[in-house]
Amino acid sequence: MALLEIKNLHVTLEDGTEIVKGVDLSVDLNQKHAMMGPNGSGKSTLAYALMGHPAYRISEGQILLAGEDVTELGADERAQRGLFLAFQYPHAIPGVTVTSFLRSAINAIRKARAGGEDDPIPIPQFRDELKDAMEQLKVSRELASRYVNDGFSGGERKRIEVLQLAMLKPRIAVLDETDTGLDIDALKIVAGGVNTLVGPDMGALLITHYQRILSYVEPDFVHVFTDGRIVAQGGPELAHTLEAEGYEAFAPAGVGGGEA
Ligand SMILES: Nc1ncnc2c1ncn2[C@@H]1O[C@H](COP(=O)(O)OP(=O)(O)OP(=O)(O)O)[C@@H](O)[C@H]1O
Ligand SMILES: [Mg+2]
Image 1 (cartoon, protein in one colour):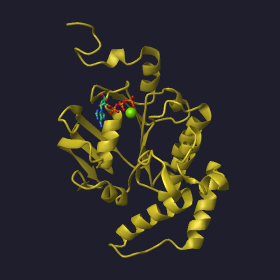
Image 2: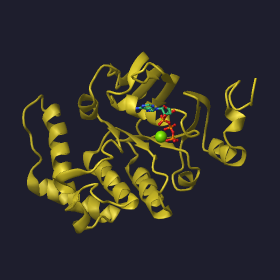
Image 3: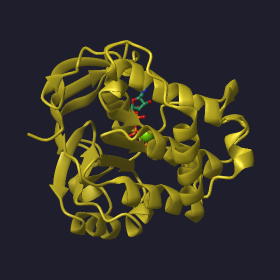
Image 4: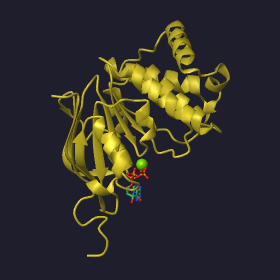
């Protein structure tokens, strides 16, 4: 059994509209999965539901993490178990610096793992780990001392998100590339982070509608997502087929075919 198992997942909005219409997906350690699909097909909805966002209701199906059913757990409990959505803090957090945010997030996870007892990371250890990660990801001291996402450019935001990944060390990382304004440098940062971090301790699901990023991350598995469902799966070659043919070839019957 894979570390993350999604079984027949259906997700609805608060008004009852079904957006994700039965998804089966397994993501294991040491695996890079790419999910690609057109705008509005429900990819971000799937990501939010995975993380336990309260606006997205799981109406059917299950999410298993290391065999444990986490479908009913809150976002914090999922994070403590090693699930991480890279863009879960898209908004600025005024008054909280990147450094203090990272330390609080690490300590929250450590506390949960220690059964609710405070177990803060020793400051020298935190400082050393942060220094190494910042050097590796080329995050400046100035950026780390600013408030989270407060006036960050798209590329700076990405850098900090990958810094979070490196510091929080989740077991399954879900990266939702919603930002269409990414330049090639930001794409390379995300790709470099994924390539470095995915291994025996981490697996990743990279959600994108760019083919571009897949020139930098070679996925082990590609999933084509249209209208709330995975409609095709394959290896990296599938991304090239998409590049050449677009999503139309994969559209479910009755979709994209004009008037009935
Ligand atoms: N909170 C919400 N309230 C209302 N509609 C929503 C909400 N979240 C998602 N939707 C709708 O659900 C559909 C799927 O949206 P979603 O963001 O999951 O698509 P996506 O595949 O991530 O698209 P993109 O590639 O543009 O990021 C869209 O029609 C969107 O408007
Ligand atoms: Mg999206």
